[in-house]
Length: 306
Ligand code: NDP
Ligand code: OXD
Image 1 (cartoon, rainbow, N blue to C red):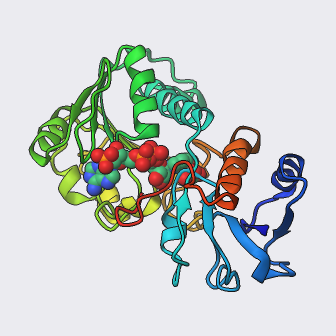
Image 2: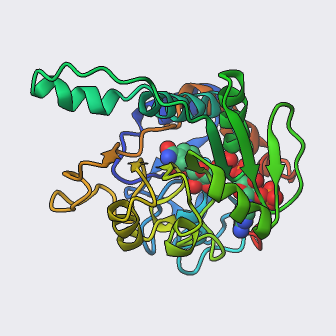
């Protein structure tokens, strides 16, 4: 058996080195230079390019190198094998800090003073008193964000498909409750997985329910967002601004209007970046499990798509 790493446009030297340290007996190959695709039984993948997985005719499992699996599940002709994803407390902590920092920056008017400094404009204003946050998605990352925000005295509601109980956090799971909550919220954080049910969810019908002109923070996936609807919602002040970490097309085209928009903050998909040091053990564990014919940890439900 050998392992293949299919992670385009990223330096995989560190990942290879760590895997060799834990699995010295394994052959590790890095796409696109795979000498013996027929020996590959375990693939570690992120955004696998079309046809890149096809030569692995004896594949037994795919491990996503990230928490999301949409780029793997959307692979045309995906091999019919189990797929696992990353569940890592370090990743969740990074995400929670990213979200909290943007919520606080908005509450404290950082962006406003940044622009005012350019004009030597000394006009103090109180920090915003708004403190209600709605998180779409109450999974591993949504719950981590909810906990940190609640610890910082925000009133937090999470929304998901099924019922959840989380201390200090209000949870809703119906469409009616979602509508009511949108009318009242000051911040919307998207942490849903990208599936056919969630694609385009950040669109006109959701924004039209917002009555407090909230700040939108999209850290899920770019395809959750209807970009035209966002621009319209910003111009109508249904939303007061947006922090976007993920985009339909990444890297974001230099000509894209988001870059220069006064109400939009762009970050280059960095809210929670997989850290080789903290995730290598679960990749190794899953590789061993596959070798021993056991189920992997953190397997994705292929019919649900997350
Ligand atoms: P989880 O699978 O742990 O959680 C997903 C949550 O979304 C669950 O609460 C689930 O509800 C809910 N959900 C799914 N579909 C629906 C729906 N149709 N309606 C309502 N709720 C729904 O995922 P994670 O928290 O680990 O990650 C979430 C996403 O964050 C990833 O899929 C990825 O896209 C993104 N991400 C972004 C990163 C970045 O750097 N920007 C980094 C890492 C992840 P239920 O449990 O009830 O089914
Ligand atoms: C992930 C991501 O899903 O980086 O892990 O977006």
